[in-house]
Image 1 (cartoon, rainbow, N blue to C red):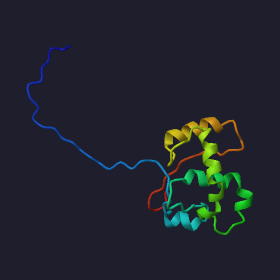
Image 2: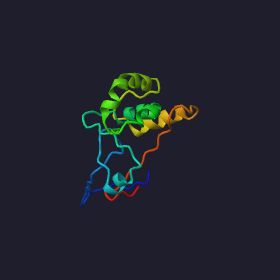
Image 3: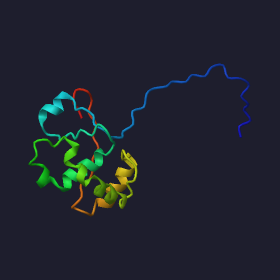
Image 4: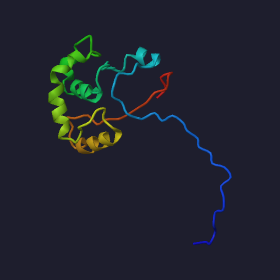
Length: 130
């Protein structure tokens, strides 16, 4: 080594800031700007963390569900929930909410499969800016 020796430390500073995990899972109300655009189906899963599963169910069954005026209600999708949870296990998704790492693994697996959606994750500020 260099031969230097620390004799004393005069000060230590610790700065702490909140960490907001980039994990979805449960219903989050959209900013007004995005809500008014009517371009996002925001499924209101307020009592569980299966957001990803509900959206996959909607994607795979869109011709059936897009006729419904209440796409935001989980009751549309719950009859298929266990089937899709089992299906996702084959892609390595076993915990909910789905982590970013699991989404990366899922995307790698489905890249060759046009019958499954490739997943992109976006975030918006309170004003609806992506």
